[in-house]
Length: 128
Image 1 (tube, rainbow, N blue to C red):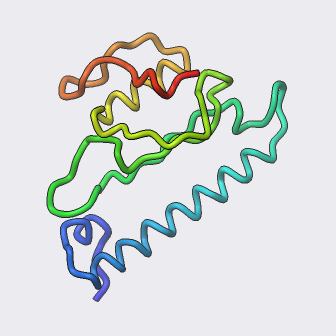
Image 2 (image 1 turned 135 degrees about the horizontal axis):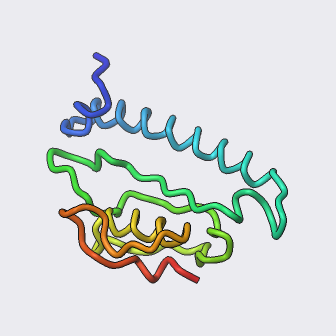
């Protein structure tokens, strides 16, 4: 039985999780293709990827309770030199709105909080 992605995120059987994994893998493969293409475009000071901050997150999390923590996320690109790269970080103490806030600040947008539900402050450990 094929279920939609969101419904699968609430189901924990091995068969349902295998189906969700296949969907997640498809998304990640498309992102890998995009990153490869961005890295091949030369720009002043590096590549398009060097001058970009791309945030990828699994908005469904796992199991019955969705989470706004960016634990199932990754960031690619150097944000024009504003991001420290090549690391694995535990960001479970942060709210996903802080990830979006960090992205906004990397792009030069002077904001301190996104939305009324999120925590204020950027994730400074991502910054160079």
